[in-house]
Length: 200
Length: 200
Length: 200
Image 1 (tube, rainbow over the protein chains, first blue to last red):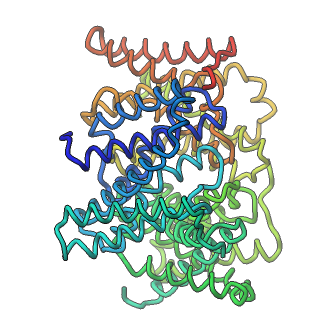
Image 2 (image 1 turned 120 degrees about the vertical axis):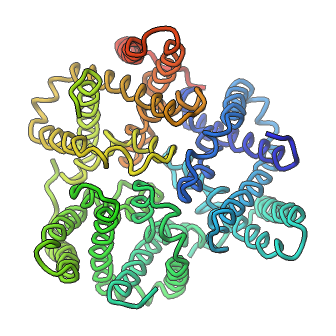
Image 3 (image 1 turned 90 degrees about the horizontal axis):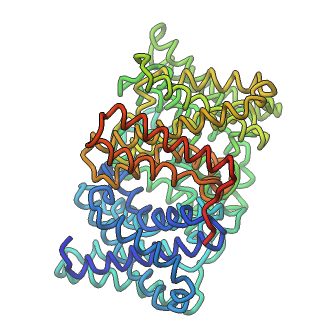
């Protein structure tokens, strides 16, 4: 793992996804092992579903031991320092939004490498960003949040599509940066102003 | 995609599975994006689980962009014309039964191509037909309908087995047609007369 | 399938996992087909998730028809003789604990064959042992038992780690036997004395 900007954002995203899973699991009064497992699943679920769907196996986190290690340490620290960490709600939300953006673009890139149709690449990006939370909610026996709360999957779809459009026009690194910023920005605006998609 | 009879039935099946997903999701008051995602998952879930289990990746819908496109258009139309579409309840049920039959036989055929045991092929057919609905119900946080409502998986098992038996006796195209008719017929009779399997 | 000790334990484990699934499903008043499907999923779920994650497809039970056959016969017998089988609660629990131990070690071994990191191998062992029950509980719309009841996943992690440690020190067959005994022993002690992990 080389420590470039992408890697750092990926680590921050993984950390904040883990924390979100751990907090959700603690609210449901799971035991410590259950809490850690939910933390794991939230952080790696999206990428795992993506890898399984495109046949990229063994799935990513099995080939990079740093990721499970970061999740484990994060989960344990979150359990120990839960009262302290809670006070960083805004910081965590920002990490989460950043992670969502980066996970989305990583997913889109994996689709491109597999030679898939652009629309499928965007779908893979959305799956990578969102399905960790979906599996977390399934395991905690609630309807996945992303289906009825603030704009979530839509942010991934918009950011992912924009990334593909910009890729051929501007520098790829810049396109990536802007796409992450768009996903992240949509989430921040949506949560800040309580924007929701209409119920049909 | 060539427009032979199988393809037309597959499209009709995909459309009716999508509509069933969209209606279930709207009942649970999901937002528009949640409704569309549930529509997708209901339509492609069974085939996706089948492809993942036999290692046929990237899964089918990622290699045929027509399918996601049909689902997207269907989902949006269903949301817009929901009151109108509701009046076609019987038509939709017939499409659904047809789709179930065809999806089952497609699953059996994929198993045969993979050189699997006949019983496993029937299982794959049943998974292809039923698991879209199972995943829909998991995401909507209810016990899957097929486990406690009118005969569903049983219709797939009977139709799939019959297909395998007939395959070596009569013309394959005819065997397919008859097997689809059997699955479809069992479903229609079961729903018409409210037949359920006994609770054990 | 040669009938060595491992195979016999695997069969006993499969049988007891199936019975646990069938009993859970009957409590939820599913129909007979639903009960049989839940029995299947409980018995093969863990190994299936493991195989899918490492790309070992078609998944194991599709390549060894004996396993589905054993599950089917077990499920039907359990439905017929439910009142009789209930009286063997302790025996069943012991089979279940044995099965958990063996499934765990099988999972670790699959990880080793795939050349994965030791920690990932332990994770695969835990998934193999636990995820059948997790999927059973998801389908039955409850929070997975293993997240809030007696020590379960922890037993797999301890036993799996011990197996890896012992593998290079003592005879592999002996290491396996001892690891299975450890998982099994932890489960028995935990349930006998109602030991739970703390809620965080």
